[in-house]
Figure 1 (cartoon, rainbow, N blue to C red):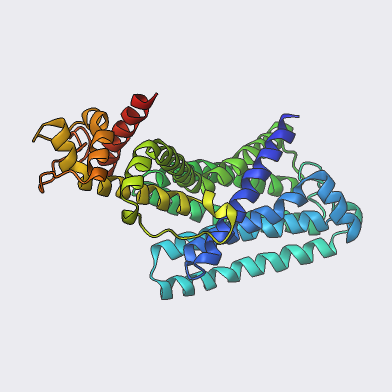
Figure 2 (cartoon, rainbow, N blue to C red; figure 1 turned 30 degrees about the vertical axis):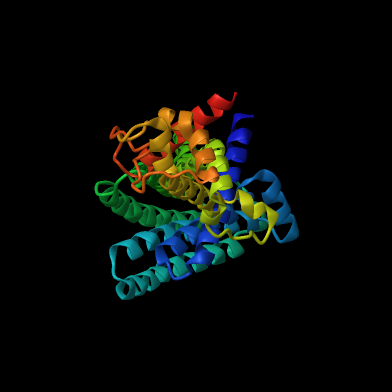
Length: 380
């Protein structure tokens, strides 16, 4: 039951990440590193159904015994190959990286051809066995596992070395994902090396203790979801940060409504040009929310600059007005402005940042929000 739940969670994360990465590739098809990550996830996604009993039975029933095992292993070879391509493109200039990546396809193609031929030459009754029950004295079975294991061990070890190098230099959140990849790849290298040694022992007629085989499979089963998590972790963290910013901007946008409503009624001509969304759901997109947030902040600040002389007059002050004080006198100042009352030509600072933050836009927004909340409370 636990493995079924884990497999379901892994599938959701894997295919969700694949869709998201594919969308990024369509936006920027020239990004070779992004494309390598997409192809790595694609191969992992393609291998997943062949490792599930129902998927394996369906594949074997439609083709021949062993087809699911062959397809799964070919996809796994592709997964580690494109993982290596990611580091190649990250470490080299484009021309050299392309040449190196192409050279890496030679051992991949050779291994894929050998294990395919080995599967074809293996008698039908020996093709669908699991690694634990396979007869390694059968030449086709032994060649299949030895070649696939050798390539996987080599490619994973190379990827592990590059991952450790990058993890020492990277910053958050990438470094966290890289260390997760490091742990996953180390487990995969260990499991693959143990299985390779066990295959040789069984080929020579020796017996491998069952706990060794089970242990290697357990390490691999744990390493695979950790590997997927490491690949998608930086993207998930970035996306979570984007969602938090989207939520924050939407909340502030609504919080500024009382202040904006009063100022917009007095100075409708100061409203910035609005872009009409093509579809109704565009209103909820991050870009639309951010755009409306910045527009409302600017319009509130512009309105306060225009009304500040009247605010200074009704508040009888020449010093900067705190948000709560300005909110207390805002409606009176707006009525005076609407009546055409004379006011000093010089503006008085209203709801200025208090210096507790970094002095940027967020400090300004914080003061505007305080004034809007005070304005709403005065009406209640």
